[in-house]
Amino acid sequence: MIQQQLFGQPQTELTSDDYYTPKWVFDTLDLEFDLDVASPPGGPPFVPCERYFTKEDDGLAQDWFGRVWMNPPFSKTQPWIERFLEHGNGIALIPSSNGAWFDMLWQSEAALTIGPKKFDFVNGSGHGIPRRIHFAALGDENVAAISRLGIIR
Image 1 (cartoon, rainbow, N blue to C red):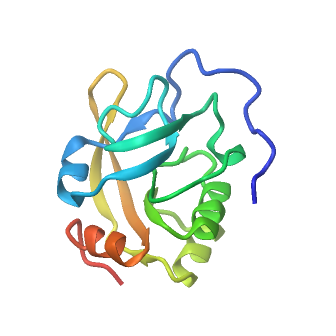
Image 2 (image 1 turned 90 degrees about the vertical axis):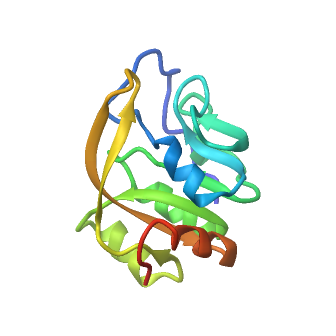
């Protein structure tokens, strides 16, 4: 299901949702992605992917294809999780949460790292920002890859 565009204007400055996944995560996963569905302005700094959607593109309003990487906006995670589950092929980095969307993910067929793991994101200025996160995966090769990042259920 492709939903209506969420954002009316292009992003011109960094927001509280602009935290980048460090390069070591992708080195550990050792996978190539077809699409980063929620990339920062200017493209993904470390994600090994063929294509990407920024806030201006509005990844929720686009067709997803192939293996996706998703580090969604943590301020509005639920529609991204719904779309990720519907797509069925990829890896998502998500915040630890008690929200209904996390329960929906937990009840799904997605593999999840248990923990949560404390994780230092990189912001636009290159500084680390600690958060508690999980990785979710759909697809056998993707599940095997996140097992290198932690224990999965």
